[in-house]
Length: 445
Image (cartoon, rainbow, N blue to C red):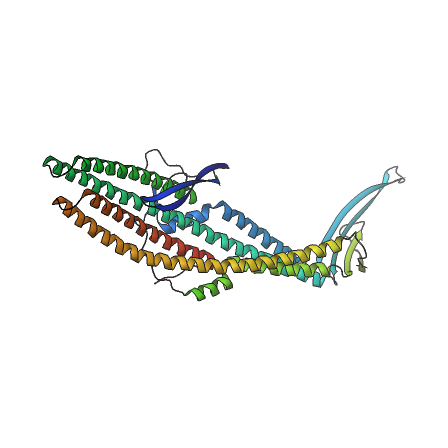
């Protein structure tokens, strides 16, 4: 295994677009990751393909899967403890007696034996039953943790995927800005030749063009970094290009907020895991208390022994054996205190998880609703800003407007386009967050 540092993306809105922050994130990856040949085009993936690959390659999900397997093994062992222990023994022995027969040969003894035995602790049935139930609750908690991690992986993959799509959209917005500034500079040069524009208009247009080209370079770097990050999320050692050309438009949510909160508190993996941990702790406490009871073992067996094979001499035995715990150096008291503390901690975690999920669902729902409204406003602003820019360009072309008005309108159009991309991104990430918190996919019309 090898470790490396990759970027974690964060978008911050600004007047001239979005700023891209690159944070360090330590990841572990396998040396068998697919490599990209130099000069090869990036791998194109749909959203479903990216999610499938991420679920297959996630090291965290693999670790949680191992924990789930261990919990199931512990549950099997606890259930098996409810059954009697059965053993089958067998053997052969040959030894010298130290005496000689009339021919002077050493006398040897030969023996064959086999034995079947079984034992069962009668008074330990309640304790072992509590152990089995506790192990079952532990397995249920591990399964819920697996589901929670699975949806977390899906959320992270969708966020990386849509952020990559948004980054590529921003490149197209900046390309449009460069084309407009180039056309604007050509128009200024024509007007300057016929004496209808000032020299400062040319300088201002050249500065605006250089700023647009610089923003395009920055947007391209952001898009490349986003593609590389998406590639690392799905388990590739190279960049990945989304098959989507733009962030999808919003679709109405199928459920109201109250229904989402109810579903989340009822079946969310995080909530189920917390409940199962509380149940497991409570049953483990019961098992600890029951361990203070006396034990009573029933042992039975049947044996065959003889000097010849097969052995024919038979014998049987039945034993009742018990013990009463009196003092073991305060180990019982310590175990009881530990079990009680575990129950208190589990209940506190369950309550904290309930509050976190309730607040998380409400917050994510509010973000989705706000993003949906922002998308409608942004679409209207884009249309209005484009009309205003075209009107100012027309006025400037006929000498009735200033270059400053044209550039101000161009900036307003760019900001409106970026705001629309950001609102669509917020909506998709918000829906993915809701699905993670609810533990189910929202089927929208």
